[in-house]
Image 1 (cartoon, rainbow, N blue to C red):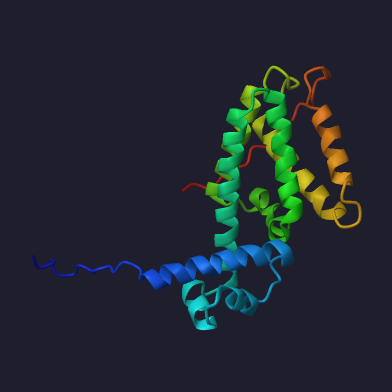
Image 2: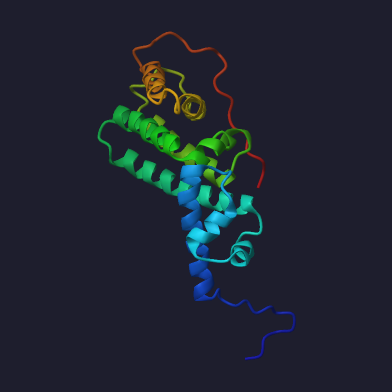
Length: 209
């Protein structure tokens, strides 16, 4: 059947193109974790077994590749965290394990460490929504053991703040952030009955779609 005038036929990506793209992303993921965002894209191309021209056809800018890798890894982590929260029998353990795993992974991944705060100041809409859904589920389940007035945005901002603590302490005093995490979590327990300040953590305002 003839196609109507003006119809653009879209070709499916070639198998080798898909394979090259995945190889670039996998190589970038490994290098970004160990070296951070300052890595030379030539190293990524070399590790993935493709030429620079192929890399730039898939990712014209280095920022495009970094954004793709971090978004993929963040989404995978959020899905894993949500499932772990649902599987946990103890709501408080689910909440504390979430923070422990998130910050441990954060400390091990240099590129995430360099970009994590951006989820608050310049949000990736899909990513921040995924994170909020996980934290909201954890907060709702742990409502009976959390001190009154703690909100989802309180918990989200606490995660971002502890992320900064990891960044400034991990190299010289790698266990200090873990101590601060335990102090912070203790302050969230319901047996702390003192009222919180009247202004809770501000809600993260997402721009309209």
